[in-house]
Image (cartoon, helix red, strand yellow):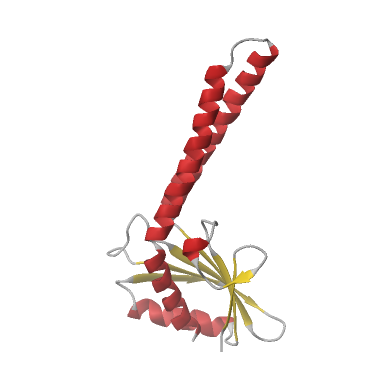
Amino acid sequence: MIKKNYYFSSKSFTMEPEKELNLRLRFYKTTPRTIAEIIEKSNQLKEELAPDFHIKSVDNHVWINIGVRRREKHSPHLHVELEKMEDGNTSVNGLYGPDPVLWTMFMFLHFIVAGIFIIFGMIAYSKWTLKENFGFEIVIMTLMIGLWIALYYIARTIRKRGIPQMKELEEVMDRILD
């Protein structure tokens, strides 16, 4: 029997990724299987699911990705961390995420937007203290806020398109844990 708890903030919910604000969903499960059994099962399934899924395990970590033939820009991956508990069970901590290249691009864009916002904020403050017109800087800062909101909604759209594959990854993980 596997106990499933999904934590998206400080509370436990059932998994409804369409309604969550977080872009990278987490979950926590408990299983009576040992870490060695789980790693062995993941290595067995690696060969069985090879063209459709890519499974990699190192130490107490298992990564499950959509196979190259089925991978899209919006395809998620699943990182599972296994920890031995005092009662003999194994804690399974999972983190869904977008493709690392896509995630890196989005983070880079966020840093650029934040940097431009900060720079124009400093320029606007300087002009304000000098009693000069700083309307252009306020317009740029407002545009950066709008761009940040647009990046957030683009990321949510990408995550929404990846939800069917996210459920497939969860099924593979459940096969590993059962």
